Length: 448
Image (cartoon, rainbow, N blue to C red; front, side, top):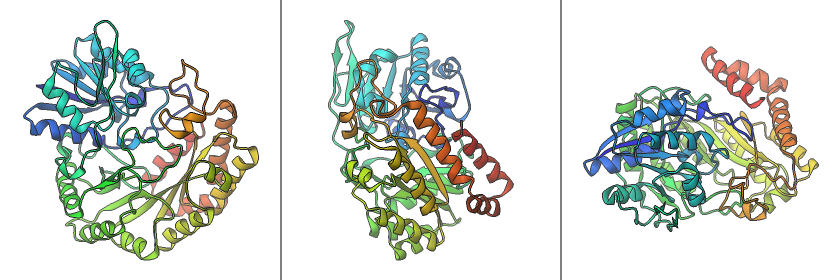
């Protein structure tokens, strides 16, 4: 069967909830699916239309002469923080279906709201939850859709739901099809060019109320470091990789595996700059020094709030003092930090919103990013939201906050953080002409 795997051109979108910045990160989940389907003998094409702004109709033209299209509404990087406005995705799906090509949707939106997404996109089927093995079973059974992990609408419009498949063992997946990704096309503005993406673990055992588990679940699964080393070598050959992002939700939770991976990274033929994300209470001085020695240059931390009351209310399970210690230790080990904050949790007061901005400046990470708290369906946080029937993906807690006020606070927080003399001086000293240009572009984007 001829199968197209498609990441839409989100860069072509204008979002009702405000601008959303879409980095050009490799669509790793599609490379995973491609590897699974190619192993079964299918002819697979992967198109990442997000690399360049492209109207939905032109994106849809890629589907001509294909037997089936699988299109994702959220790659792994956006499984936890998906777009709220799906219009560009919906239009792309309908444009493909207008060509008469059967279309299957996958991603966080269909996993959380399969019936709504099916009716909106008119897609032939919806993969619910982790897609790799469900995609294989669906393609194998096609055009039959009564497959575990698949939801669909029958000819009379009746909805047939699907329970999630059990979480997959990552070791059972073949290596991602890195050769189907455009070499040299991916980059991370604060890490470097020729970016590749990897996951050593999937899932997270913590229970933060804002975090959606509809795609990954809470069961932590992992690959052994030897397997990761093979993937790194494959990606280097296929993509000319010079930088890497380990997209694991909590990279350092399995400390021994990280240490072994660092040992292997140190002996790669070509030195690699890489970054990861983890909790600030899951790092220690020895681990951080080993990571830095192995090429780690940036660690992401989800801080969320500068109010301890708010952190407790969202079940973050961390103290502000632990956050301060983790960020400080990372700087002492010689690495940059990027901290993420959310504004507009239910019941959050103006004083608590201000406390978050002040805490960000006290932490003084290398980079700070401020976002709106989103009650995504399927999260405990969503249960606190009085969702109207016509608002399947609410963008903020409108019972407690006005969107215009939160957007203004987000812009002001960004400006206050980066326009401090200490921050400006640091970035002017450290950036090259190329990185300064791209980072300035991101900064201006968030001030819109």
